[in-house]
Image (cartoon, one colour):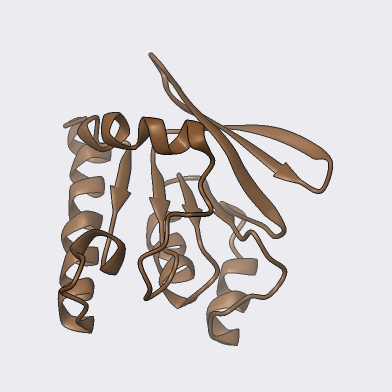
Length: 151
């Protein structure tokens, strides 16, 4: 599972999902925006890999899942993942995505491999309670997809 973001939500999702999964947190910058206690807890988990200054370049799908191409400085790495989650803040913003990712968004959402959660999904309905409920619902969908085989 790859989570794009560097705030409380991204780190909280990573902690929850890391119990039975390998998780990557991808931060395009250097600054971690989560609470220090969340960062310490994430850092102590061997199943969570935090990558700062890492930009998503490309998402490709195959029969086994997703192949995420990421760039850190001049180094390019490919990550094999099953799910891609964006936890990128309160203001809806997809401008940082590459063209290839944007072209794949609808396909990946239909396949339940990409989940948009909160304000980026709900448009003008920007309320904490709506976003929290949306995050809980989506986490449950991911859980059922992983453990019940409902891909």
